[in-house]
Amino acid sequence: MRAGVVAYAVINIFLIGVWAMVGTGYFWPGWVLAGWGVLLLLDAWNLHDRKPITEDDLDRELRSRHRAFRACTRRLGGWHGGGHEGALPP
Image (cartoon, rainbow, N blue to C red; front, side, top):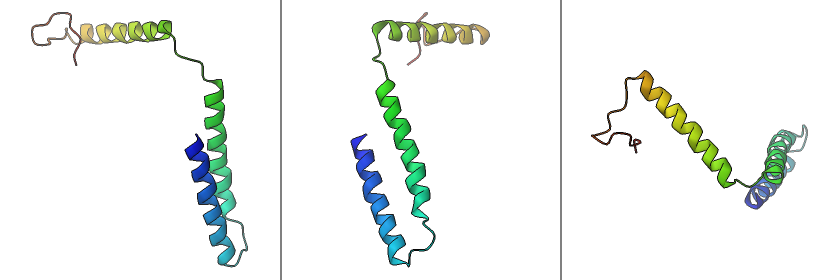
């Protein structure tokens, strides 16, 4: 996040410098400032609201993926993984 903010500042200062050197006029760097700024705010919001991943979360996800894998292999007639019955593919 910190590197993103530094890049935002450096690049936008550069763009504003280019804008100022070519004679000002329409403030086109504002589009970059606004668009990139919104993305930075969304990233900060995501970091702030993110909850830690628990063992239960991991177990639930693995069970869900295993069920999906089993359903898919049943539809395809089973998975033949080199003689290792029941083994998951790499």
